[in-house]
Image (cartoon, rainbow, N blue to C red; front, side, top):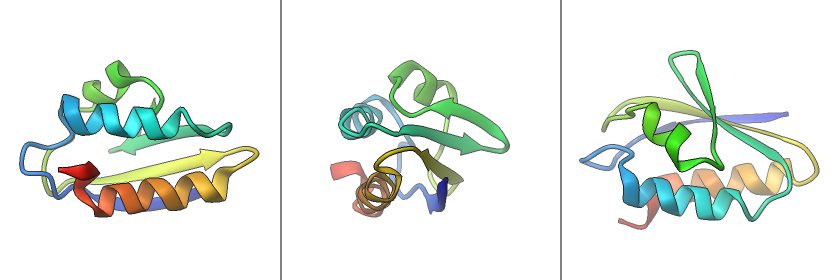
Length: 87
């Protein structure tokens, strides 16, 4: 299992557009991927689950990956977050 902390830099938080970019990337990996906010864990391959976190700008989230390609997935998702999910 791999984990990394990210801090949301998107002004509007993790709304539908960046969440959909996250889901699209996450579904390309075979491992399980979760987002964790304040101890609440959700499946990062589900846009509904991601949006239910209500993550806002400046908040810290953890990305947790577990499985076959966990390291590659974690690196790609952290890079995506650091690039503001393409916004």
